[in-house]
Length: 81
Image 1 (cartoon, one colour):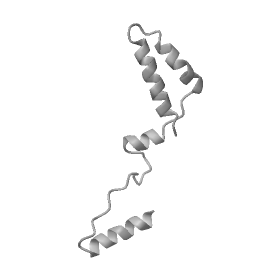
Image 2: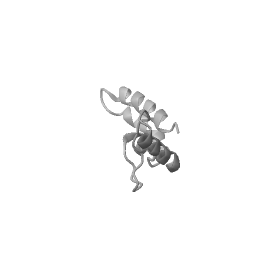
Image 3: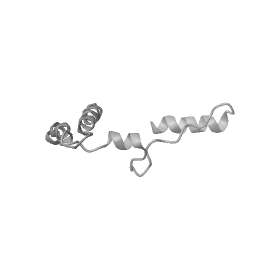
Image 4: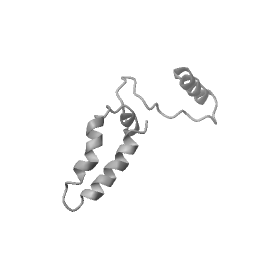
């Protein structure tokens, strides 16, 4: 991947109509930048907690049912890898 990036830079230096490549998503230090990279490297959630979480949301007065529905939608997105 690094070779392709370097070739692209070389082409952009020598040919006028070739644009420079976009900056790399990952830094040289290995530290993750950006929301997407952090979301992909997130730590796993405890499955027992994930099963109990929508039920626990039902105990919140007035808006508990909406929180429970939102929690189920979030968990589907969270565990979809």
